[in-house]
Image 1 (cartoon, helix red, strand yellow):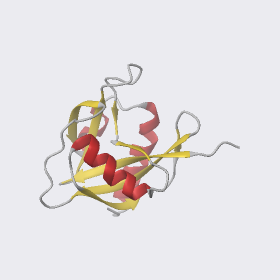
Image 2: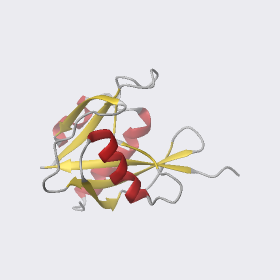
Image 3: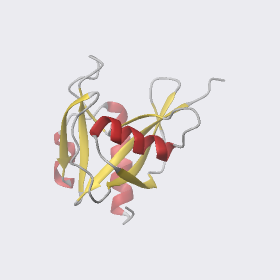
Length: 136
């Protein structure tokens, strides 16, 4: 059986808004929106990977808060796991440094205004359910 490789995504919140990142590559995904993140490297915890990926992709310092229940299949052997996260005090504002060409802070009313990647839609829905239950 093939070992699953975890891809971590950040439900990064600021003032009640969720950060969405527009992919610039690969061409098949370009122009669609996702939760920022990336692969967990060998020997790395998912939480550490997420903090690293947010620093590399967005130039921010953040902390993970809680894992969103569930995981979602990506192209084999990858699975997506999502954590809620917040910027640390003194962090710079996010910028699209790697793999993205735009960022957008979305209020709950605007969440479905962007064209999310199909694989991220159930993760965004699960994140909303977690928030609606009062967890952050």
